[in-house]
Image 1 (cartoon, helix red, strand yellow):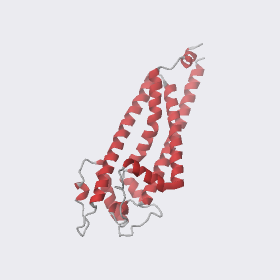
Image 2: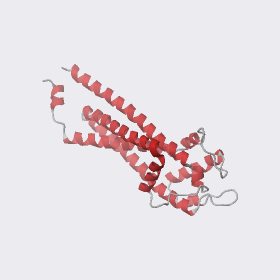
Image 3: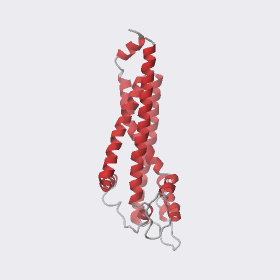
Image 4: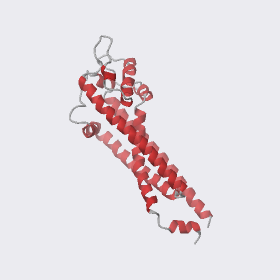
Length: 240
């Protein structure tokens, strides 16, 4: 038995198995939150408001109005300002852009968005560290298996989300808000600014984007992991 056969037959150390499990769990989280973070960019707004069939605002916002006010809302989610950042905004007639109920909801959304960003950043660092450690410790087999299994797990989760969106978007949307927000604090009148800027079509497209983008990323990672695995196997065979 040569060295490659002995390495393959040797029991995997507990730390290597633990790192593999960490990577498997982290991969879907990091991929989903990567696409959530992409949603919180002005470029996405610019594309979304120009999508064919995107509903016009029956209360008078033009595309230019939406492209003016919506990025300010995104800025609030990611900055360290208080609700006055939005509460001090006024239309040309002096009316406040947001009412008290909307400001309270945006404060809740801000906490959720910033928590998601922190989890995303921490997950990226932890996943990269786990991969680097396995690579430096010559545990490439564990690394590619983790990426392969994690990508399959991600694929399954996103297929489930996609099915849910097709079968009943409203149920998914309501369920999401019931999990992350208390009571009916997220319900507004159609004339409220938040609904005028971000109608239901916006959220439908957002969920679809997250599902499809994550599926594509998981598929690319899976293919890359399988190629990496075959390369490792070929390298091991060549030493026999």
